Length: 423
Ligand code: GDD
Ligand code: MN
Image (cartoon, rainbow, N blue to C red; front, side, top):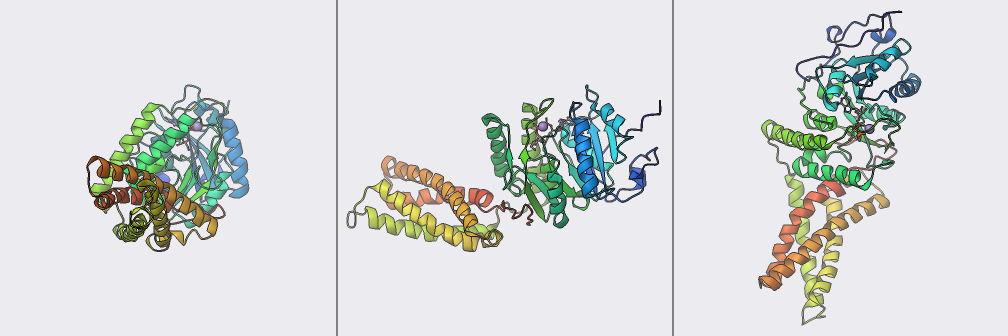
């Protein structure tokens, strides 16, 4: 019985990807396979835990696809955490037929995100990728990611851009995922706000963007770590539909959500220590405020014209709603052109503009409800003059509007023909 091909020894110590794959970093393969003689463009890490039923199909599908797209320029690195179902052994048995396959069996360390980093540490590629080992990430999306990474430091497969989605998640999982995203937007807007799917576990990153950067990921969200600590200047997103699991089950438990929160705060702290950059882009905020002022003027003029006994004398709430909607239209036009002009010019076209307007309107309407409640509270309960009350309510809601619009309305989500990149 020929000696089974050797497994890759798991690196220990600091979680850090070297600048260049050096000979001494990874085990010399005791096979004369071509995999250690040619430059590798892509190293794709497949983290597994109890994926014994999916791993063979996974490896053969990936091989078929990449043998066609980048023959001889890729490697697959299965990083298994000593699965009880022996996923690592099933993968190891395939190595003799798949020369580009490498397998690591970790017995000392556990966890999805550290598994990915350990895989990248032994990788040879200039582009480092990660894909789930359970066939929930469609392998064919790799071709879109390979194209997108050509002009970017990071290319993310996202469920929340055109062509994206999830197939079988229930309402609770969807709410949890979106809730986690909004929480991330509040705690770490500069990181989480850069992508539409910060929870994605399916992406490619240039080695140069994370080389020699100590990483300390927690739980499942390796993308957060790359965004938070890497030098990511250009970023691209491609849409994908998260598939139903065909075998085994998700390992996501409440622990992953707790780890996610801890991870957010850890990165938040690191960013304060490291850069202390203002979290709010000041110029944009000042412009947003000036536009808001013009909106206050529009709001006040129409509130007077509609509700004042000397003019039309409509009811306060009805006048307020009409006056505010007119102010929202005014503010959108100015913001789209001036405050966020640099972003909206990347998203030309009426349908994209309409989409931005609807998101802007939705956020501002939520702010309007807040505004009306505050106005009535200050006017009817605290007896403050209606115009002073209106001003106070508008000021409180301006902050709300700025933050959410910056993160949701003017984020570059549409990636054109599936590929786009942005700062
Ligand atoms: N080595 C290792 N160690 N692999 C792990 C571990 C671990 O502790 N936990 C999970 N994995 C592997 C699984 O075997 C699977 O291949 C992949 O990581 C994803 O784990 P799942 O448990 O299937 O996660 P999910 O499908 O619920 O969520 C996935 O997709 C989301 C959307 O992209 C994960 O990738 C999430 O991080 C991601 O947000
Ligand atoms: Mn899964």
